Length: 388
Image (cartoon, rainbow, N blue to C red):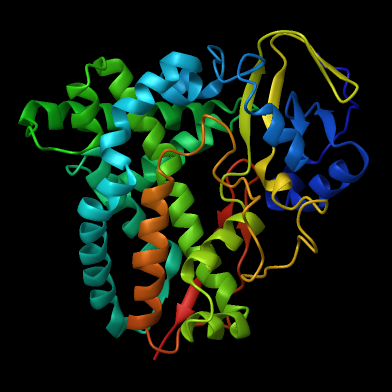
């Protein structure tokens, strides 16, 4: 085990709001061992930026890790050539060119139809009625699982996220996660049995055409669903909620002084939907007076890094005019989020502008508060809005 200082946390408080605790860690013990998580946490932006690239030490290969046990050995849990081979195999599906020329039109048509159907209601929970279905539709078409409902896509994603974050070993959480992965496997089998077109650009089709095994293909689709649903879902609802609480900044966007991309990037910095990425120490290592031993579990705390006061001035403040170029919301090394372009296109070029265009005088429901939850994955529990 690393010789980092031991810092205890109240896990319930950490789930509700990890930022006060992370701020104290950064200030006094930026590298520390947390017994409640059985992991050594790196909380400073530059420490993470430097070490995430050292895959020979901070290895993604975690055969005993929760993600591998529950979802299979996907590309996120591989390093070096194995990782590059699978990343190259999926690239035709999620490249910037494919997103722009093929997926974006589908995203826009779906979101427009959804908002058109909702417009007369004059109220909605953004999480469940807008963010969830638009994110799930994106995943349906990109993964190729068009036979899965939006609700099932969201359920299986959340179940896998809960399973991969289940460091206390709750058997009910594990059971639900297994049920979710079984559902995905069944939908994959059904789609293969129906036949795939030669020009199909879905993750399912491009991986099989590239020669990846069915087990590799299944694991990578589960990976895409686990991270690809919650991040855009939570970013859509959270970004809208936050910009509505900052009317002067919203006015800057609507007057084209700032962009929806700035809103998105600042929100991801300020309230990182993906707050952590785990690693395993592959060989003994000394860094910043901390000795890491083989098989130590390490958490790169992206949420803390994106509020590092040595990098971002007044980091707890939401400010869309801020320079977010040093944010590591999508990671910093070879495991930089492969779906980043799809997420950016969906949120900044489709959903956010359409929501404010089609739902006039959009505002938060004053009767409902907004609560956030999570530390490994973080987002609002509900965002209730009204419009004219």
